[in-house]
Length: 259
Image 1 (spheres, rainbow, N blue to C red):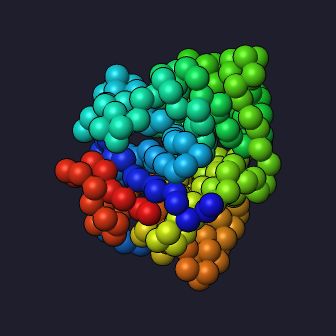
Image 2 (image 1 turned 90 degrees about the vertical axis):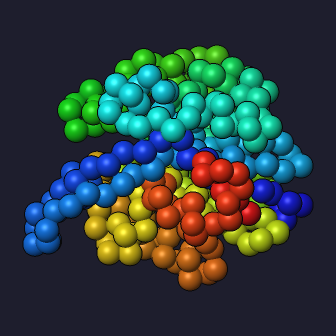
């Protein structure tokens, strides 16, 4: 069955920054600088085959050190959805930045699924270079690498069906192996875009985010997501506060239902 998946966006953090810090080469657009808000999410998919967690957020102590507002511990919010991290069998890592793999060690039984290209990049020589190293945590990358030696890391390429109704698309751009997760349920199909698009404005105005591995690939990712949207897929941006109003509130101001 592909029509019985539920999907949720879980908001756990927030950060305000200037547009000139958010967008790549913002000065070139010739527009005034002002503030933009980024919210931080992870995603939960539930169905008869079990629970799939997509990304694991930033560790609260890391978020605070980096000047992010911590709305709640991601694991506390996961528990409010009735999910115990210790029993989750599958975690999808869309990419290896600190705000997406920060609590991975708190899922001790999970198979971790990510792009082979993504994993190989972060084990390679450019991972420690400034532009790439800034949004990562060395200890978290080390833990991610250790999962391969224990047989808990599954590496995928291009398009991969994780389960009936759940598909992974490798689009790259923001990072070398950035994944988007397609989920099909009774209410249609959603694309968990993660950081392939951070905000709807970024995507709609075709303006790449400031942290990017491959600018042409980021533009191609926008185009691929537009194709999905034309097919009726609803797009879930990775860091946009508007996600909470575009989709159905589930409880308080931290979780909304996507499917």
